[in-house]
Length: 72
Ligand SMILES: [Zn+2]
Image 1 (cartoon, protein in one colour):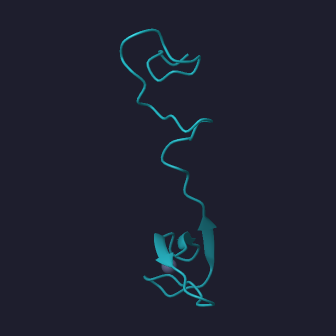
Image 2 (image 1 turned 30 degrees about the vertical axis):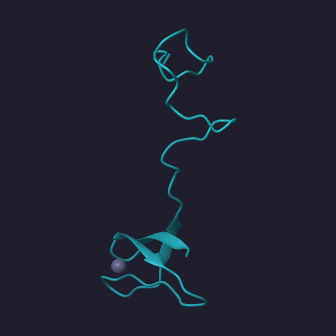
Image 3 (image 1 turned 60 degrees about the vertical axis):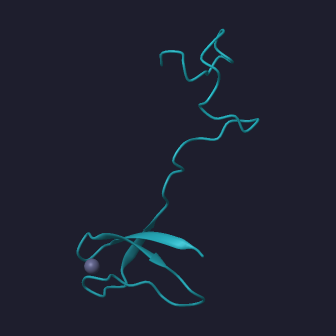
């Protein structure tokens, strides 16, 4: 199900709602339909190859963007 995030332009409320079919989103606080859709960012970027932050702690850094290297 698509979970949409909106900001109400009328009262500045940020909220999430599930949209089913052609149902229109409205502000749960003031019922305004003047909404700005927000896109939530992924929790963490996915790297090519699917490996995330869990490289082995022994041995050299696994690649130039290894999680164990200090960020520049
Ligand atoms: Zn509102």
